[in-house]
Amino acid sequence: MAEKEKVISPINNLISELTDSQDALQNLVFQKTMQQLEDLSQIKKTRKSIARIKTLINENSFSDNN
Image (tube, rainbow, N blue to C red; front, side, top):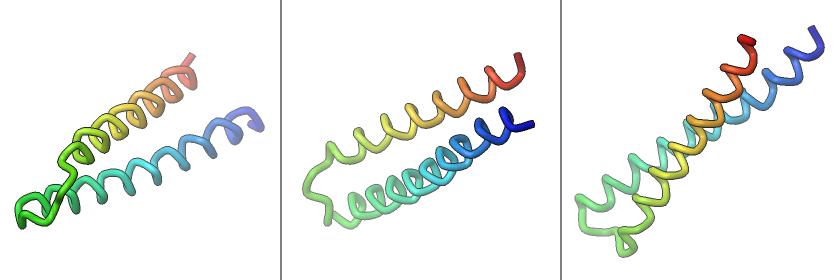
């Protein structure tokens, strides 16, 4: 039980970070459409960050099943 609790806490942190990153991406896309975004590379960086977070979540959930 203690081992599962140790794994669940980082996953919860990753999920909250994922939500924050997705909200940030949505705001960046909105700023782009309103032509208020100066650094367009922020969108690409945020998408990569989201992909990395999703990868970590999937790796952790896969290791829980084994």
